[in-house]
Length: 209
Ligand SMILES: CSC[C@@H](O)[C@@H](O)C(=O)COP(=O)(O)O
Ligand SMILES: [Zn+2]
Image (tube, rainbow, N blue to C red; front, top):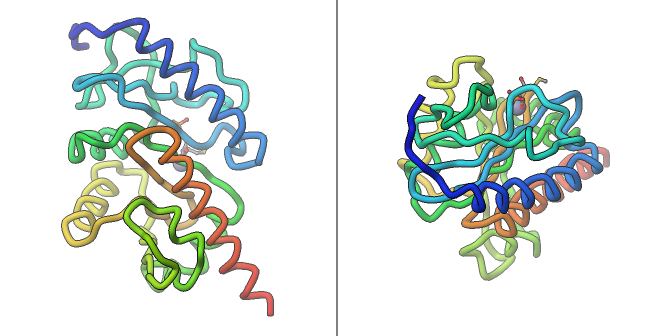
């Protein structure tokens, strides 16, 4: 356990923002059966992240803990999310990233299964593509990657790093699992998460016709 200090007021602020937002996402049914995990950057060395295995619809401040950028717990015996590495790898790689959100909605999970053979979901022509930072027109495309699932986090993280080496992206799906999305702060990460969710629902809806 590292003993690097952090500002307790900053943890309290992050925990409050995480809890409110996670509850709203949970009420939409995006975090079934204790699934999903969430984090926010506190400072250069500390991340506030959900404790593993908690019901994400009923979180209190005791369900948010601190890890360092190596994913090691700071000043706690609690166990951070089983997928902590998928958060910390983004914070380490992109100093500007401030928030990472991971959910297991029905649309995300079904789409991940349907499109896993392609390796990505092709999103084109939607006005909502402008919700992704950097896009200024609907006349663009976003390829949302679909990674094979694994219980081995270093394997998944290596796949994410390989993708990031060749393309900028604001999220990815994991087959049969769910979606990761991120942003510079909670508002941006949530906008990206909601845009992916809506666009995946559109793609699934069109498959019905
Ligand atoms: C309850 S099954 C889902 C988990 O295996 C995992 O994918 C997940 O999203 C939540 O894990 P957690 O360790 O609580 O962060
Ligand atoms: Zn998960």
